[in-house]
Image 1 (tube, helix red, strand yellow):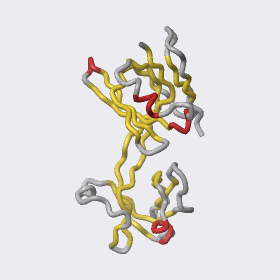
Image 2: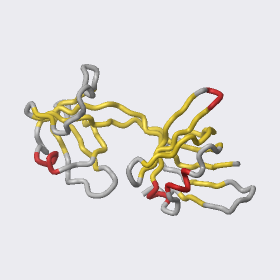
Image 3: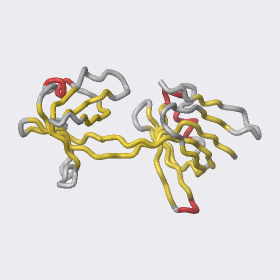
Image 4: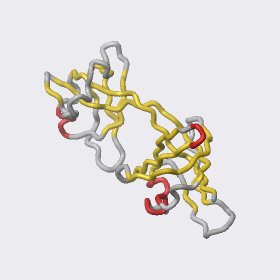
Length: 185
């Protein structure tokens, strides 16, 4: 796992620091105001950061497993403070539903899948049921050999159709992951 550390210091001029780097992905540095902290399902937390001058707000994720010493309440207490932080950004495929034999397996909400929704048809590859808090990897291999990957919690229903030809409906999404953050007063 990535090793993000959170160091809590008593009130002093020294800033509160969460710090580490994630190898293999170029980091971007920013400064903004921490506006909101939301539990996104343990161990993930979503931080909303605002840039008031640009009238821009963006969401970032932070894995609490990487900073075991920091409870959600501590992060929530930092709302409203200016933060300098580094993050990585990554495009991921968000699986919406899977169709096999005219039947949808994930029961996506009505209207989620439209004519503009991305889709790929191919052989489903899923190794085992996901146990724990981190999604597994589901793959669709198209006839041309191109593999589309999805981070996803693999269920027994998905394993039942493993190796079958399916159509996966998905969206490309950007994930911003905080790798270092300094909260200054």
